[in-house]
Length: 241
Image: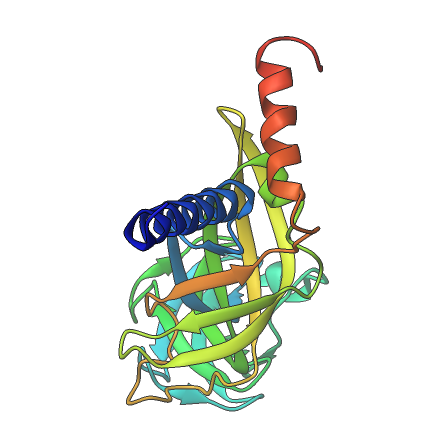
């Protein structure tokens, strides 16, 4: 055998080995991260309202404005005098001598919504305003996963949050909610992110900002991918339930 033939044979062997190696990696490799279909920055918030109906006589705050715990938010003149005796009020309040009820802030935060203007009527139990609490930002992400991949999201799994300016922030999965649609696990993940600061990154770190989330999935080893594939095939032909 000539040297040229030997080199061709060696090249063929090397090529086959490389091809087998690549196919093996492709076959055994499972997705190591799950990427969100949609995600946004959110904040813990509390509603401001009363257990009685009445006319909003004065609004002390503006949407987007900052409030401190105990600040006056809204004046309401109730339509029923005995409503002031309600023991079910969730929003702290004070009452003036002429019967006007002043709703107060329960925590520091920013006014996210104002639903009833001065002069408007607020029904019993209606949310008149919503306040986003300070230092309560988190990320809410929606993902669609196979049942196998859903099982690979462990408590505290590492997550990367990418802001619109392409800056990455590190976090972890704090909680999960799931529902099944068409055999897939439609998952809502709450991501805790230490690097989130109210209105940071020139305002990008604010409630409502869209982001992208990547969650690390637990890897059970090199044979997990083939085993999942075989199990899926066995179920498809009825060998497994």
